[in-house]
Length: 130
Length: 102
Length: 134
Image (cartoon, rainbow over all chains, first blue to last red):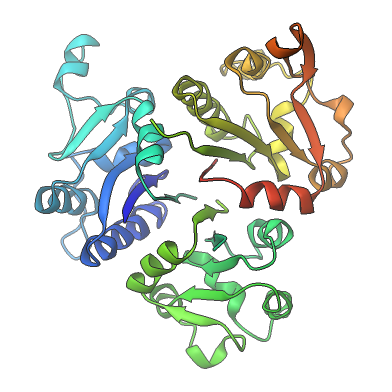
């Protein structure tokens, strides 16, 4: 079956990203396909590569990147939500005249249309948030 | 089948469960995750409400979230079914769609 | 492309957090995909449609007028739960009048907002393919 996952909260403050991660992992384990994981609202903060959690804690952001690498997952940060919150890839940073970018490997910035498209393509859409 | 309703908030903090029960058609299922699992602990007012809901809705709770919160299996309302993340995924395939009461 | 029934459920009030505004952004983008779109306003979400909102003094984006444009995007199935209104002492007239023009009926202006009881709304939820929550 094809799944679309939506993550509406950032890492660490809420459990949403953890729950979404465990769900996605379990879905992949069961042989399902993940059409896309779409990060919205503060959820875009999951895509930073600058997070430095203590060593005895999980690394929420890296974990998504690794899962993406292992399974060719599409991790999409909503561009409008990301720009508001200072999440910029190299192109966006250049366009906005900013001195750096912060998107982790495996994440891409794209439009809200990707969320709707995922809902159309997938057999199931699951939302994780606060 | 119908809708899998997902509730992730404590019934003592938000009205998510209350609204879910008001808007869940008979035959739809309810899955408690995250802070939503506190509703399943008996004796409590939320447990009484859920016990009644069991007449119309299969009720599930995510084992990992119960365990994290120190809620023992024998402290939960009768008739609730526990699932792990694999079971969570399976439920989403068995029901046509999910509605998360965020 | 297959047509699916999308339901956007709004349960949060409009100014204390960004969920209402960003939900509206999804709805407007989603309208371009020519799917069957339905909106539901439940619990504090009904406050999003209240008349006379003016956020100028708190310095945030005044997005309430955008709801009035939904009809132009063919978003005209807007359900408000009666129980949520009643609990808050609100009636339909407290909400912004949202309308759309029906091209199959000589462009007659019609009401987009339908106040429905929880039992009817429960059925509407059952009929959807994709449900997004804000």
